Image (cartoon, rainbow, N blue to C red; front, side, top):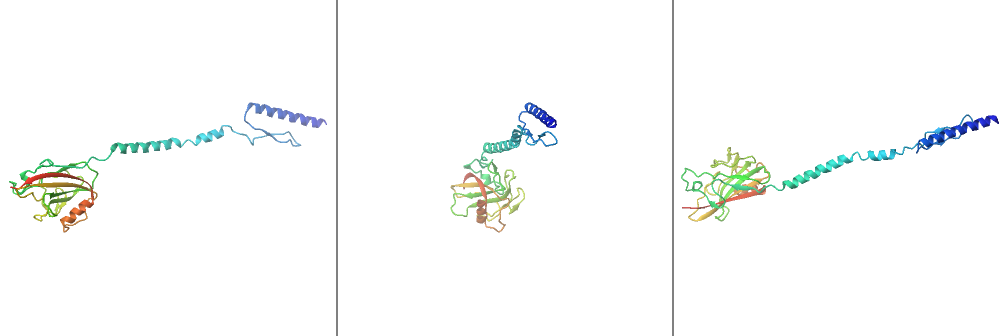
Length: 246
């Protein structure tokens, strides 16, 4: 009997101690194992809960959010920059020799005082990025297809303004380019305006192309060269001049 009372007293002591520990650590769940014949019941660590653990895990899931937000901001900035840039300015063809729609100076016609009429200087600005350029000059007052005065193509995108007096020849060096035959003298060169005593309108058309070299050869007809130019055109610009023969 005395031994049983000692065991009961010891068990009550441990229970009191465990209850005191629980009051100091709120949120801790204590499981009291059933006392064995050899000793008092002992507390178990199993089942101890961490009330902050779930929140910490939830907080950890937000670590990637700043990175995602930064990517979205970069994309929005790029889109805004593209919108602000807008379309490229239009392609414009000009000449220091005459204004658009004005008379072509005699110097560039069959009535030139020079030994041979040079081609007029040409320059261009704006337009989309191009792999190459081409210029076609026709007499718009002359009906039919045989009205081509000049075709120069494969002009590199970095070509500076065309100078006055582009040399004759199929393949030229300055500027680096190719030329097709004209409709009048059948030469790989600029052919000057030489109309009858009536005003004719001559159109210089600049073409921005999507290829650096046209798929044509020296033997290709002028009509086919022009067809290829138009097939690869991404933009164009016109400059017109007038002249009346003497």
